[in-house]
Length: 268
Image (cartoon, rainbow, N blue to C red; front, side, top):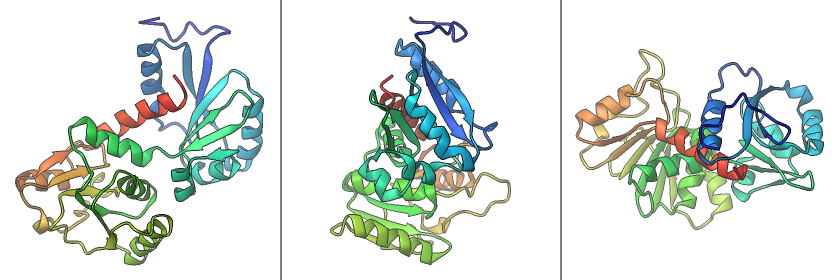
């Protein structure tokens, strides 16, 4: 089926969806559809705009839709869908959110959270391993929290969490310890010195004039400095890191690898 025309949808085509509200900004369907073509699968992803108040009823209909294999779940549905699913993975339970669902043959909806796993896979795709490394992570929101749990899963030697609101970093730290009491995790300052890998898990850097998410004076040669921000490709943080002699890691590999993980989750 190489080079399959996406307009050639038949009664055998499997349906995938992306659930969001609003939905005009989503970028995943072309990537998933390209993967389906490359993997020679007769499947297509389409947008499903569902209002929050209709999500539970929509999920019920998905359980009976035999041609539906799964979907991506994004804002504002990640938390609510975790409660609606019939089963979620341990990492999704830790996060209290899902970003993918799969329909099993018996109609059950299974959810997972692949934000953090996608970030770790993105690093790995560039030959960067986090196992046994000291990692500094800025942010305590959804993306940063997913990355934090993925770092623990991947076996970092120590994880330092920093956030403008330190109480949020402490809350994330406590949640991690609640699920993995023996891990080495702490709340840090704006100074990333003394770490092997530095990660910006915030949106700072997307808008012109955004401040650095951390104290750039703490960047040093030998560090890997990584972004979740994809546009601009070189954020002010990455520019500062490059000037300091650090290895930089762009935001795009996270999306690329997450799409691959999502496609596999859908059994494409």
